Image (tube, rainbow, N blue to C red; front, side, top):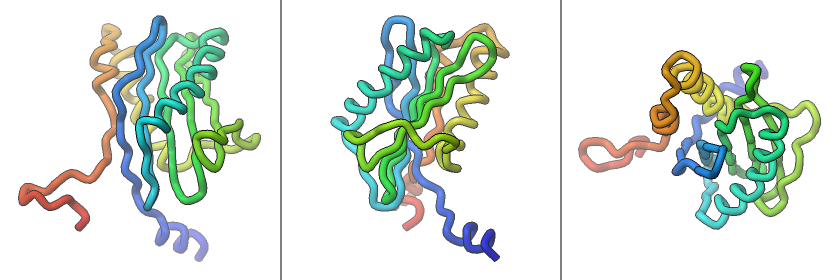
Length: 163
């Protein structure tokens, strides 16, 4: 019974890929996920970029290869930030932060993991890393171009889907 209720309440959420963040020795694919009624702006993204950069710098000191994914997830429960860096030993470094808003981010509670919507992005990014970095001739441009975008698309008649 509990699983049926959980399934009944689940709704996909739009995933918006942002322009890559490029800095010396680091390439980042950022995303924003929004729950119903949540919105974001460039000021929020800039704050998250500054915040995530500190984690990414630490990750590089710990063996990250300089390719990373940042997921900002906004919903009625608050803000979640996932910072994932690929490491030189075929691992990833995963750090999670949460708060009421982007100004209130702090390490997520011990044992907390990504939610289903964040895992959608991380799963896509794992496949992209395998395809363009590990199983190819290291095609950084293709890796950067391969993004998950689940925003509603307009129908041919010009009406957004889902309306």
